[in-house]
Amino acid sequence: MSFKAYRVDSVDGRVCGKIVSREIEDLPPGDVLIKAEYSSVNYKDALAATGAGKIMRSMPLTGGIDVAGSVVSSTDGRFKAGDPVLVTGYDLGVAHDGGYSRYVRVPAGWVVRRPEGIDAREAMAVGTAGFTAALSVLRLEQNGLKPENGPVVVTGATGGVGSLAVEFLGGLGYNVTAITGKADQVDFLKGLGAKQVLLRSEVEMGTRPLEKTLWAGAVDPVGGATLAWLTRTMMQHGSIASCGLTGGVELNTTVMPFILRGVNLLGIDSVLCPMATRIEVWRRLATDCRPKHWDSIIHAVTLEQLDGVFEKLMKGGATGRHIVELTD
Ligand SMILES: NC(=O)c1ccc[n+]([C@@H]2O[C@H](COP(=O)([O-])OP(=O)(O)OC[C@H]3O[C@@H](n4cnc5c(N)ncnc54)[C@H](OP(=O)(O)O)[C@@H]3O)[C@@H](O)[C@H]2O)c1
Image (tube, rainbow, N blue to C red; front, side, top):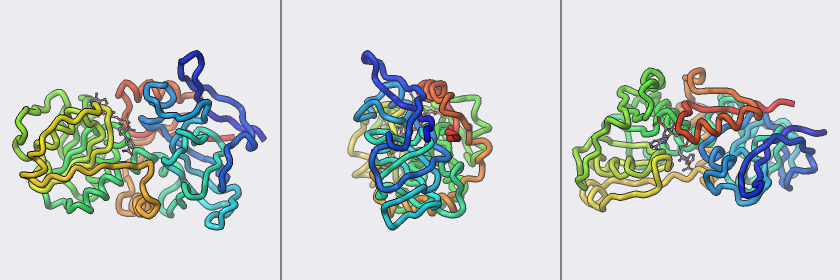
């Protein structure tokens, strides 16, 4: 039985993807064979497929760092045919054939049973980006963040991580400020739950080691100068979930926010997040953090449309989440 997959390869030093026909026997070894229903598009997928970032450790490789579907067969007793499952992170789409494929075979240790309350389409609308947003919220809560502590801020707010962080925090009763570069997306962000929307170009960042305190918590997929500014404007014992780098990888700040205001800088790693935490995050995603605004967040695309979506993400022009429909 042959099926379609989006494979990335380096030809004459140029990285690009194309749709190919594959057979089950072509898949890498693994315990669990999954019939995929949906995958998703993350910034990392765009970096990988365009070669803008050195993401893939071997090529050619099927792209896609996320997948959701059902088990076809399993040699591991934890899973049986028909089980609804999902995989995000680990080596998927990085060093092991990924989710842009109707069939995917992976080690059982990567597989999460999809909880009731969230279907495969919704799970991939969450995907790595939404999982990262939810993991950020969990880690902020574990470090004492509560709605009554004060305002929280989400940067890169229209992106995958950002838009879902706004949605989760808004739904949990936080007073959310969204920061975006897109002036035309204010209504979108308010619809997701932001009380206030600030334009990136209008944020006055200052240069002092400690600026006026503004935020009790922050989810930051942007990094760079934005993250440095956040460290300078956190309230006493506030926490920042540092989860991305769309605005840069450098961090120029001082120790002052940490030793005088007790600010917590929390590193967020979705890829090798321990399984127990993964299961807890997905439980939250299917219950109290379950997004309510799927219609404004989800854009469905096919494998054939992936190149255009990657281009949009690389230009910082995407809003919400792109899911990839995988059909026979
Ligand atoms: N830590 C982890 O495990 C993990 C997991 C997933 C993603 N990430 C990282 O998180 C980041 C976001 O991923 P994503 O999938 O949400 O990407 P995305 O959907 O492309 O969103 C990125 C958003 O960042 C903002 N942005 C783009 N260029 C910017 C710039 N120069 N300065 C400031 N903001 C800029 C834009 O939002 P606005 O126009 O609204 O500002 C853009 O929509 C990436 O760096 C990704 O690698 C990390």
